[in-house]
Image (tube, rainbow, N blue to C red; front, side):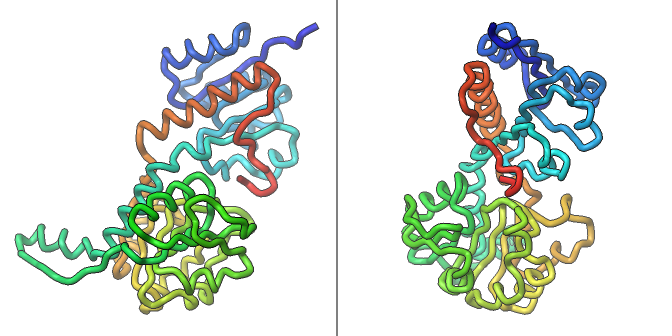
Length: 316
């Protein structure tokens, strides 16, 4: 006897066309969309699959739950202790924002190398201000994390004639990277880089990995850029590094506290460009996230292994 078709609850941006497509992929399954996730909670005990989030207050009632798909690429909020200890499989939308995040990093590197804020200020003042600035050609970029976004960024950097270094657990060669470093060589990696870009997820291993000693290891002419998660760099060390001139400046799209509070010290930090964790906010990112779930639902219905499974212990 075949297993009964699953009950699937969906939140997020699912329109009628997408619901029709999902129903065609999962014939017989009961698919229910909740525009307000709170409306799902009274019925959560029915769900075998949820595309969205299940908080710690709801998990005890989700007695039939087998699979949660997070619309986020980095599902940190979902990996709380009770969920990690459960048998529920977690998948994520990792990779959906790789392209725009890499573009955002390129923009920040270009703006920082050319001191673009000086042009913007001159424009606002109606002032003609020509000056010597840098270029990316010939510079070395060190990319912390060599997943989807890190790999796409490395490819873009090669198009700018840059040397590309990668930092990850293994030093095996990887496409678009000239050289790989392991974590025990972090300071060597930092010392060799003109731009350090954090693309890695925030995990117990990466949280606070960039401390004062790490920023001291960087060149005084180097720039720090982060678009994945705040907290990988220690905030006090990062602020001092830029404020006191240990490094040349920073481009920050991800922050330890979000939204970055009004009056926060980072708003006025010298040679720093702040963006509101906005690098992957594109319609294409949402589309790719939906497609990851859609394809996984088809696999689930066929009894096949899912893609983008999150190691709940490592949080990625």
